Image (tube, rainbow, N blue to C red; front, side, top):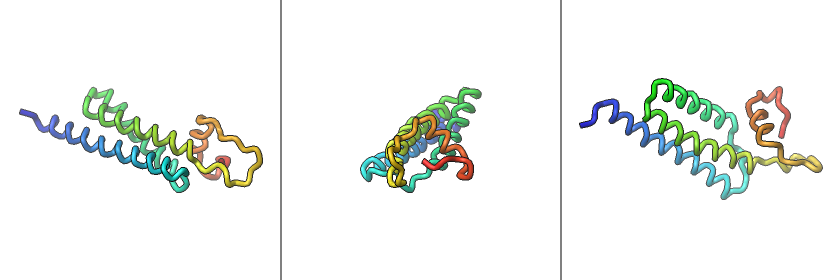
Length: 120
């Protein structure tokens, strides 16, 4: 017989799978449309930070359910972040000889507030 902690742990994993699927669907939609216009990098940054903290907490208390749920969500979030990077609408800004920025420059740019960051 399962105890209450195991039942809610299994439910946590199931709902985290749905959360992971949500980010996979979003990445698939961006790929099919061909542009990431309208997709918020701030939203993804906040979601990734949330799951990194959740993963750290799960490791500290060694809760397998929390670790599995956060790793599954983080994997698809990072994939979605890469797809947003790949299909970010860089062109159309009227810049000559513009090259796509390095992924690390792109990440740092997404973390800075609008007043401080350079527009990509």
